[in-house]
Amino acid sequence: MNVYYPDKEIILTTFLSRIPTILGIKLRSLIYQSLFKRMGNSVYIQEGANFFGTSCIEIGEIVHILKGVNIDARGMNNNIYIKDGVVLYEGVNIKALNATNICIGENTLISNNVCIIGQENIKIGRDCFIGDHSGIFTSHHVFSDMNMNTTTYNSVIKKGIIIGDDCWFGHGVTVLNGVTIGKGSVICPNSIVTEDIPPYSKVSGTPAKVIESRQKYQLKFSDN
Image (cartoon, rainbow, N blue to C red):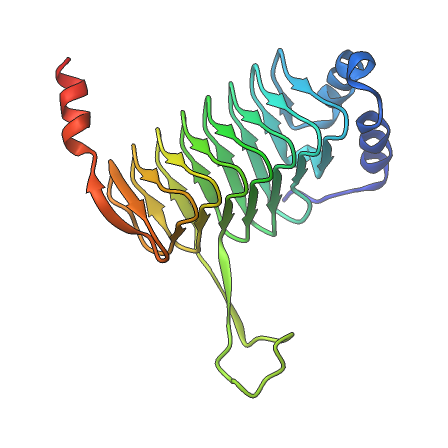
């Protein structure tokens, strides 16, 4: 069972995040090696990146984490895996709630101000692009009694999210609870994905619907 003990970690990570990039890259790498569950070689962490629950965070090789990124694995039985070659741009927020695994696959790029919050497992495949201001969320509240105050709720439905390899998200995409997005899919800007998407689909809208299949392009590419 992973249990979060904050004092030492918060002191160290707060100190490290404030060291200017030009001075702090090597120092951050040395100390984070002792804090993270695992940290590979050639990891670039800019100033202003914040980490919590570091003993539950694994970072692979040649990963870039830019300023303003927040990665939070606090809680019980959480794990966050950032695989080889991942780039997290400014303002990315990744948070695991209790008993949650979040995995970002190899060579995936998460663009500015993306929010990934897991109250159930989230798996993002390899070679994906997630556009600016997108959100990936694995829970929603159920209001069965309309007389209740809106600050309270009856229950929370929690399901995982799976995003296949080679997916591309435009600006402002939202992916909601329980969705599986098939390999090679393209999600157009500002779409809200509420149901499963077949592989090699192009989808758009609120809620997002398939507007074109990319399967023929994939077959043509494979033939070449």
